[in-house]
Length: 226
Length: 300
Ligand code: B12
Ligand SMILES: [Zn+2]
Image 1 (cartoon, chains in turn green, yellow):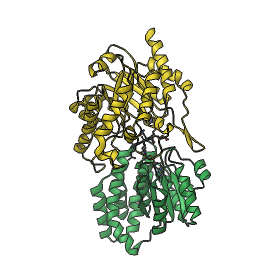
Image 2 (tube, rainbow over the protein chains, first blue to last red; image 1 turned 45 degrees about the horizontal axis):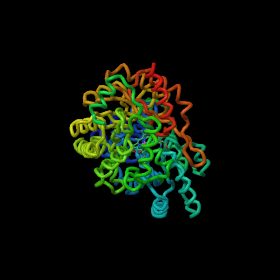
Image 3 (cartoon, rainbow over the protein chains, first blue to last red; image 1 turned 60 degrees about the vertical axis):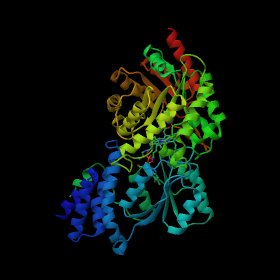
Image 4 (tube, rainbow over the protein chains, first blue to last red; image 1 turned 90 degrees about the vertical axis):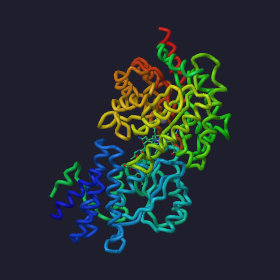
C-alpha cells in the first residue's frame, strides 16, 4: 500500500500536480511514514525522471518548473519535520549565479534537485560577487559552494571565487555548472566538481559529502519498479 | 523613414540586411561585464552610436536599437526601472542621427524578454507583462522608430503578449523572432515551442514579420528557415549567432567568421528569407559579407 502511494507521489511530481503532492505527503505522514522515506522514495525518484526527461528533450523548462513547484509544496510540509532533527540533512550547499550573470533557470533547477536529494540549500541569487559567496560560506559553513555561469564572459569569475576560497583557507568544496562550462574548465580553475545537468549535479554533490548514490538506471522505469 | 515604407519595401520583394550583434559589440568596445547595457545610451552615447554607424557603413538597411533589456523588469535589476522612456527615446535618437538619409534605411526598436516567468510558472501576471511591453513599445515609437523588433523570445505566451502590446500601443510594423535549438525533439525553444506553433501563435497575435534570432549558429539557422519558410506568407527574418563561443584564455571567441558564414548566409537567402542579419558574435564584417551577397542576388 505504501509502495503504491509512493509511486503515486513520484507520478504527481512528474505531472507537476501540486495538490496531489501535498495530499499524498499528508496521507503518508498520517500513516506514520518518515519524512525521509517520503523524500527518498516519493519525491526524489519523481524528480529524477523529470531531470532525465528534460535532458532528453521530452519535456522543457515550463514542465520542469511545474514539477519543481509540486515538489516544493511537498517539501514545505516535510521541512519542519526534517529540521526537527528527525532526519539529518545530507549536507549544506550555498549556490549562486556569478557576478555579471543573471541567468538563473538552470541554477534554480539544480537548487531544487539538491533540496530534493536532502541537501539544505542556501540560494544567493544572481549576479553574486565574491564577497557575498565568502560571507555566506563563513556564515553557513556549507559543505559545498555551487556556482552557475551561462556566459563565456562571466565563467571566468568562477576562478576568482575559487581562488578567494583557497586564499582564505575555507574548508568548502566547489562545484560548477552552466552551458559554457566543462570538465576541462573546472580542472583548469581548480574547482572540485563539474556537472552537466541537475541530475548529475546531485550525484557530484553526494560524492563531495561522501554519500553513496543509488544508480538511476535510466528511463521512467524507476517509478514502475516495485 | 516612415513605417509604411518599411513594409512596402519588403512587400516589393526587396531583401533587407539588418545589423549584427549589439551586446557582444558593446563588450568589444569596452563595456564591462555586469553593467546595464541600455544605460550606455546615456553615459556612452558615442559608443552606441559608433556601433550603429559601423553597421550602416557596412551596409545594414536597418539597425536595431540598444534597448533589448530596456523594459521595467530587466532595468529593475540595476535600479533603473523608472528610466525606460529615457533609455528608449535616446537610443532611437542616436540611431536616427546616423541613419543614412536615403529611402530604404530604417531604425528598428529592439524589445527583448522580461526575464520573468509568467503565471502559473512564476510571479508575473499576463497583464503586468503586457504593461511592461506597452511602456517600452510606446517609448520606442515616441523616439521615432520605424518598426519594433521583438527578439530572443522563448515562451510563446510572452512573445504573444509583446506582439499584442506593440501592435495595440503603436502603429508600427512588428517583427517577432524566437530562439530555437536543435535537439532530440527537433527545433524547439527552451520552452518547447516548435516552429509551427510559433508561426501560428505569433500570426494570431497580429505580427507582421516572423523569424528567428540568436541560437547556435548558421547551420541551425538554415534548418530553421527551411522549416519556417513554407509555413507563412509573411516576410521572414533570420539573425543567427556566430556559433557558440569558446573560452580562450579568459576571452570568448565566436567560431563563425565572415568567411565561414558566407556560403551559409547564401543558403539562407536562397531559401527565401526577407531580412538577414546576425546576433551574438556577429559584427560589421559579417554584415559586409551579407550586403555583398544580397546585392549580388538582387542584381540577378
Ligand atoms: C533564457 C536565456 C536568457 C534569459 C535569462 C532568464 C533567466 N531568468 O535566467 C535572458 C533573456 C534574461 C538572457 C539574457 C542574456 N543572455 Co541569455 N540565454 C538564455 C538561454 C536561451 C537559455 C538559458 C537557460 O535558462 N537554459 C535552461 C537551463 C535549465 O539550462 P542551463 O542554464 O544550462 O542549466 C543546466 C546545466 O547547465 C546545469 N547547471 C546550471 N547551473 C549550474 C550550477 C551548478 C553548481 C551545477 C553543478 C550545474 C549547473 O544544470 C542545469 C539543469 O540541467 C541561453 C541559450 C542556451 N540554450 O543556453 C542564452 C545564452 C546563455 N544567453 C546569451 C547571451 C549572450 C545573453 C545576453 C548577454 C544577451 C544580451 N545581449 O543582453 C544577456 C545577458 C544578461 C546577463 N548579464 O546575464 C548567450 C551566451 C553566449 C555565451 N556563451 O557567452 C546564450 C548561450 C545564447 C547564445 N546562443 O548565444 N538570456
Ligand atoms: Zn544572440
